Image (cartoon, rainbow, N blue to C red; front, top):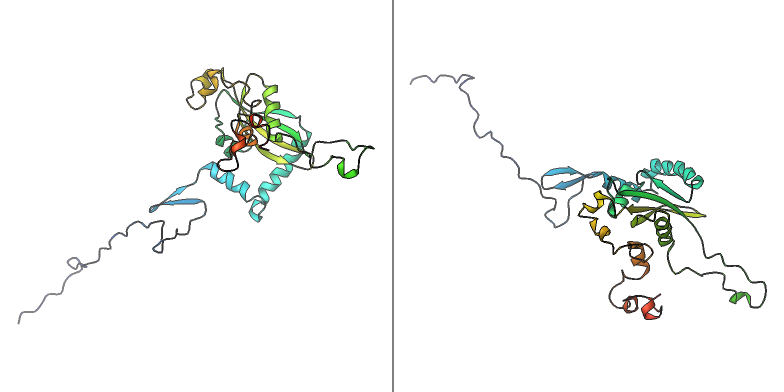
Length: 247
């Protein structure tokens, strides 16, 4: 019987050693629930995609009172001194909450500006009568104004910068004495605004003094136009048209 030659290392080959590529994992498990998310990332099929900058800012303010928000609380504590010593209306170069500013249409371009407005906190400061009624009928507590202090902040910014229109506003800080809002303002006569398809509607001439007429998001909320369905019949066409019975 002929002898078999030993296979050399060069001629020796492994068979069936190829490992097939695993299919991309779905973000949904077999039981129907969503798989666990990696912190700071969004799963999209098999790949991973980072979140945007505004998402991180929004998440940081969301967990401001948690243990992980200690650094941001320290920054706000230092900023608090500047807010209390500043003027009631201050024009800013950049918004403090970039995520909230972009929510209302802010863009870092010519024609846009941000104003910080300080409004007093508390009630209507009604004087206490000295005579003529029982104490229960003095009517010095629980008297609220017909508009929110956020609308007041927008109106004051609109009056200060009369050539600009209010796009929206958001709260940045409050304490026992004051509230601070940042108001997004747009110059409708600027060429950059007139050529921008997103905000060129402000240059049509029919949106003058929109903050004073309650056409901003805060104004529409105060007029009850965000309420729909049963119970909101007296909010339309306006509160005054329904003899002020909607509030």
